[in-house]
Image 1 (cartoon, rainbow, N blue to C red):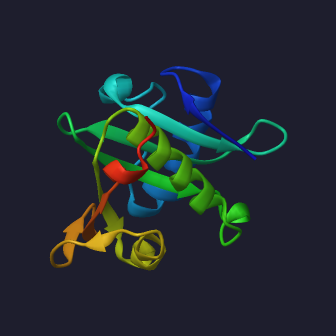
Image 2 (cartoon, one colour):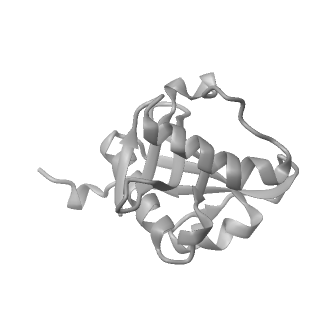
Length: 152
């Protein structure tokens, strides 16, 4: 498996759009049009690919301010779920965001994904709410590197 940051409009971006559409949007009655969503131009995009360079997981990150970012639409193809692929992708993304200077990651996690995020260090922040007709919970994680272990 290979993790990487992708470029808007790249083949990996298109594959990620298709994956998000198939497993996140269609099941709740939404779908992307034939073009890339224009709002994504300023988003950070991350993927995980199999040995044949097919995108099997992805997530987007939206800068909220200088220190915080919100992850959205994380999905792993059903064929690769429960095999640690999501953990690998999330770990890569957290390290990249930390390297870029972000300190806080916010997620609106679907209720059925809360356990996954809790296992990876996210804390529930508030009560259940409905987003795109599905129960969600806000979750948050600090990715600040303690001064004692920062490279000199």
